[in-house]
Image 1 (cartoon, rainbow, N blue to C red):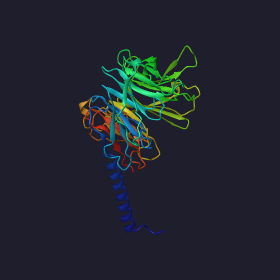
Image 2 (cartoon, one colour):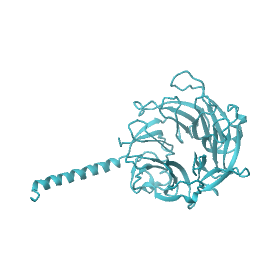
Image 3 (cartoon, rainbow, N blue to C red):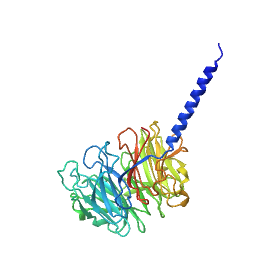
Image 4 (cartoon, rainbow, N blue to C red):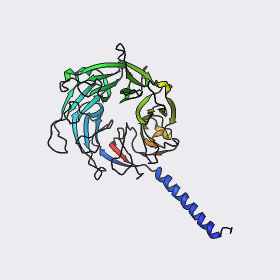
Length: 407
């Protein structure tokens, strides 16, 4: 066999240099913050984003409450050709200290209404009723705002629509914070427009509710209520399960682990496997997983692992599942509050972690913004990869989305 010629080694060396240069270029690209697009920046303190198709055009629209600005707004997705510009908006209600807003058809008329939860001195849950409109894909400005009389005493933080009693339509799980905080549910009457007929039912005491998710946690084909509670004696991550015993309406099942300050969570299922991840203000993301089908599962059957927050930013805010780099593995997107510690100023407050190796993480937001909130992972520009929709309330970036550069 003839020996390799000098030209072979020159070509080989050139190929190795080219591969190394490509890998370095890719690494540099991966470490470049994503391009940010502003949906709205015209009020103060955007606090939360949630999705719904308001005008039935197939594109996800957004609702958000502006805590300091005292506004609840809907944003119409203009479609992929104009999605990088400011979105058309309407103010559906003016209420003090809105902490959360969610789109839901309360009165079963085919149009999405809005429920907002308010904290501070307001202490109310509001229904913002969508008016009839014949304006095609536009939003009528004539929305009607009403407070729910049954829940006018607590600082409400979050609402989760669910058909809890399977009677008159969509009900609402709601959670509060502060002294005498609790989790409960609002029962829809036969005529949801009669606000004095909505009944409130307490479930459990609470400290400071962050997440409420109506999902089937234990695999019995009945939806449970998945909860993160960040403060007080009851703080933890747990779910509330309907009991078959009439004397016990709901049963609380806690996930194991040390006491932490739990923030926003995300949930996903793959076949018979279930995954739950939650951000904490203790420097770690915690993931629980169940890879064996369970008929009468208890939380103790779940495996648990901790992942250090990217860039060693202690105060996590939210985590979301999604295949960010399209490699077939589910990754994590993580948001934080970098404004709490001065040493974190300028660090990327939003980043993503590689699902194959969570020790590898990459910036999304760069140095822009300090206090981000929960996120929605959605392909807004329809280029085949997941973008990150969120909001920021300290540097007043407003309602924004970050464009995934993978495609």
